Structures are given as structure tokens and as C-alpha cells.
Length: 198
Image (tube, rainbow, N blue to C red; front, side, top):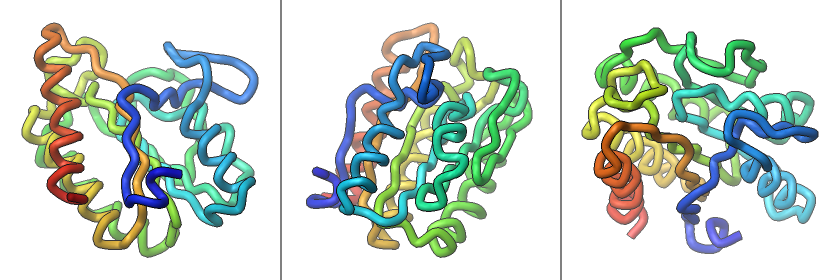
């Protein structure tokens, strides 16, 4: 609701995209994205929602919950060989090979997201901004730099802003060896929001 009023709302936690309607999974008990999207649709505040899930792990719970919901379009770009082993079908899945670097990742994202916003015409975008895409992440298997991850966030937010689509951001996963890396990566998401929206 805050995002609809102010253009952006950010959750310092959340992004629990592995939780299904009837059970938790993968460190996730309740699917906050699905709960919020359903509530806003039920209240009539929005008619069309886009979920952009860029955590390294597929948003399997979110995909399953909304598989028969035409008002919600789910897009997940994730490690093809990473958890979950058995993927659900999102409306759009891009499976990335192990070792994907900044250049490939950002090329795929920039080729996909603007066209997706034009096609879906959402009234709200949920952005799952997991930072487990980083090279030093213990569970990630991709090779994004801190700078590349920050570019990702800035691009998503700026593209939504250009399309005049409000954004709800949740932090998602991140498991680097050094806590400082995790903090910096998540802080970059907030810096990007500050630059784009304020």
C-alpha cells in the first residue's frame, strides 16, 4: 500500500519465495510476496501484478501459488542447476548457467525486463532482490560482482520508474563468507532506490 502511494516500498527482510500455499520450504515459512499481492488484488487496489524474482534460486513457491492466476505474471531469473532441484513453471523462467558473470546477466535482464513491462502492463511490481547472485556467495554458483549486482538493482528500479510502475522490494537471499559483503550488497539496493525515486 505504501508503494502504491509513494512509488516504492521496501522490506528489509522478506522475499520468502520458496513458501507454498500449504507448506514452507527452503528457509521460507510464509510467502510474503504472494500474501501481499493477493491482498491488494482482493482489495481491488491493483488489477495486474508483475513479480520480478532475481534471487539465484527460482521462486518456486510464488510460481506455484500463481500458476492459475492470470492477474499475476511471475518472472524468475535464477541459476539453472541450483536449488530447487525440481523447478515450478513461472510465466517466464530464465535459467542461468553456473558461472554467469555481470555481462551475460545484465544483457539478459536488459533484453527482457522492458519488453516484459510493456507486455504485462502491471500496476505494481514486486522485486525480489536476492544478492546470492554474487561470486563469493556460498550457495550461489554465479559470478556477479558487487558492482554488477548494484547495476541490476538500479536497472530494475529505473525501468519500473520509467514505466510509472510502483515497486515493492524485498531483500531475499545472500550467503557470502563475509558479513560486510552482504550488508554492502543490500545497502546498494537502497542506494539505487534513493537515486531513482528520490
